[in-house]
Length: 249
Image 1 (cartoon, helix red, strand yellow):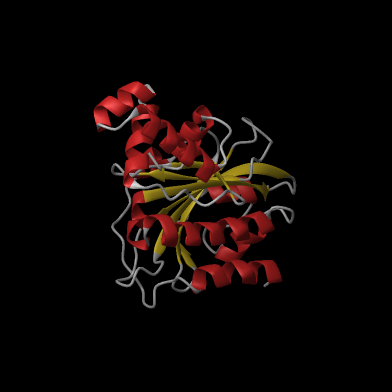
Image 2: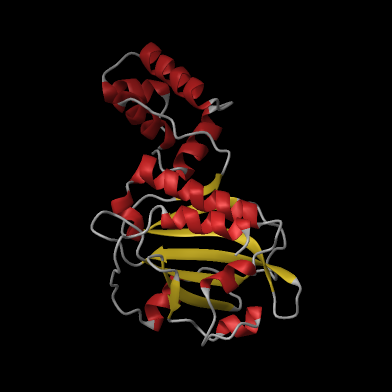
């Protein structure tokens, strides 16, 4: 196993379940509903407890030339472009930190992870793939159990990797879109600041906000400036876009 793959394994091993976990059977309808974007794809279930694979779709042979009956997780990881492996390592570490700090590990199964990387094809060339992951089970202590991974070839749509990460909220959870690995931590707004920011995002003027919250217009303007200072945004439009994308409001 290469040093890079060892780094990836360490991220998952440090947070995996201490025992085997079960998940409900997956129907094809549920699977197809989880896929965003048209293109050749394959899927598999990885068990982070022992890094074993199951439920491997035949599509893996068409894309990577790997035999679905005996492929290993390391075979899949080894198909990542050498220049993108560092991004994948950092992305997985970023996601672990993000859930711990901003969402909570208990909600892992309520989010779909999405990012892109270049993967080696059956003919030896590389193409852009969209990686999507759905956690199917967790241990009682919140350790990683089994995950459904879906890899879709999207080079017919784009060959440019943005190196951004998205968390798609399910069951009413907020989404966090196009996050950069170098992105600033989510701002810590007070309750009043969040109220003001939400009203501004809904299109209310400072005068209307002051009337709704029973505070002076000057106080509203002061809060607006404080909010901008916390985010380093240039204007309120950029602020609202950034906070909406990251689920702050």
